[in-house]
Length: 398
Ligand SMILES: Cc1ncc(COP(=O)(O)O)c(C=O)c1O
Figure 1: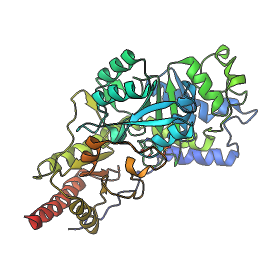
Figure 2: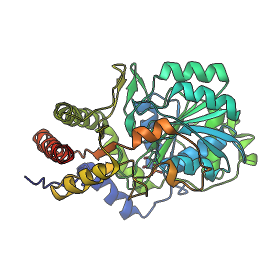
Figure 3: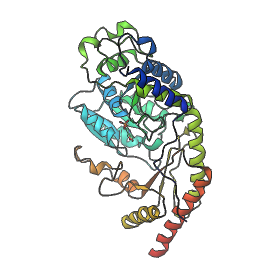
Figure 4: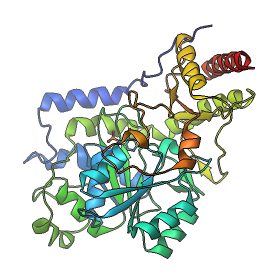
């Protein structure tokens, strides 16, 4: 059996998005601060709608989640040489954002649930003297957010949440992105909203938002925003914050607004597909899925599993043989970065840090995208292929 569907094909954009894009392109008014056209501003409307959807007071639309994280770090006061804590298991743009603002990433171990290890976080916060945690909800795995916030309060840590993979996820009913001081989101093609590239920064802190808006390149058009604080909060940022040009354009905003209207449905659909896959994979001897708290509601736009008994060559084998059967797996234990996938040992711009617990987990950790173009019936087919290939490899080793 060979699985025929693409693992990288996004869902169709809603027809309203195509119409909106056509309207915007026909107008040729693509800049969010297009003078004389402020009432029509798609970007400001999107900011208002995303803030409402997210239950955040303020929202800024930007060019990427990477830019949102940089703006967040700058806006909470991180500067050159500062230590910033982050997960040892995340994607390259996260340490990248820390490096981009001239700070030093301090990598924290993960636990078997793939989320940050709270005990190591406490230890590294003490050792490094860091005042900021860029908490990456990598692949949607949330730590116990009550513990994180209690620890942050105790240690006076400012928390910025990287929600690139958790737009729509909740912990104990509260949306990810609303626990820390700032939430950062991505609308890059493989995320939960798709504008090719793009992102949001949300916060309830008016001064953080005012600094982020001016730094994102608002010039003196900061009043032309959909979910921004009042004029007085800009009194000092408008003179003090450097303009770093990270604005979202009107075209992207116009195609995101109709998608946002469907986001809750997409989240439910992802979770249906992911649960079906998880149920099948869990029944394969040797395959282990990360445990998840019943307080966490992930968005199952991807799935991760481990085969703890596999050696490195068996892991390579699983990826290669599954690919010949049409199933695209990624492996986090590779010695070299591949496509979008890398691990902390590949980030040579970050001072090397010992993370034995994380390395042990990543050494047999596999990852698979779940596009919304899949059907429930595809899930059993995919799981069967992975299960068969894994069983064959296990049988060859005994
Ligand atoms: C965990 C994580 N955080 C942040 C980002 C950055 O998002 P963007 O591509 O919008 O900059 C990514 C990108 O894939 C990611 O995987």
